[in-house]
Image 1 (cartoon, helix red, strand yellow):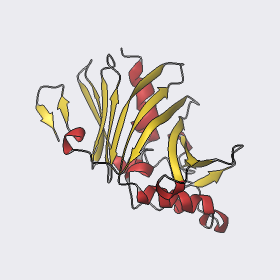
Image 2 (cartoon, rainbow, N blue to C red; image 1 turned 90 degrees about the vertical axis):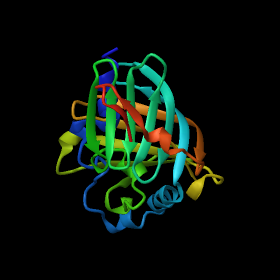
Image 3 (cartoon, helix red, strand yellow; image 1 turned 30 degrees about the horizontal axis):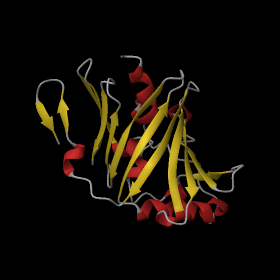
Image 4 (tube, rainbow, N blue to C red; image 1 turned 60 degrees about the horizontal axis):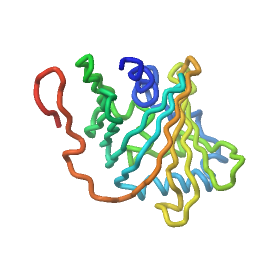
Length: 214
């Protein structure tokens, strides 16, 4: 199923989206003082782990489902639906995409991917992101782009106001737009925060025949 692989690449870990995709222009006093951005920062710092179901819609209309496990700093696992020979795992240092069909392994530093916002508890997003207007007062949208490298694309992350969630926000998902204006959206459901996640979730089997990896 090779058609899935390119969509996954720019949705999560593609090299063209390397260098923190959540970098924005130098912040102004207005963005630095934004209550919404401060609330997003509080949410991210209050979350140490998260699990969720996800639905990924690619630019060509293909829809994939799966489960997400995340543990800070830098650990994440995107387990795709049965029949999709792909796995994305973050081991704390690198984000690894494994294509079991072609026996290929690709790596990117975690900090050089759009997911660094969610995986790095020390990131000060007031330096790197800004709030977008939302037609729904219950939704907070955070956008970012490296203004020096527009070819890296951009990302928009959506949070829903939820008093019972960490920091009063529930992570709803994100949309990535690459340099060719290809859009990929990930929507989350059944989110659970600060639950126990075993180390085994962030291990993977190397298709090149060198055994399990940590």
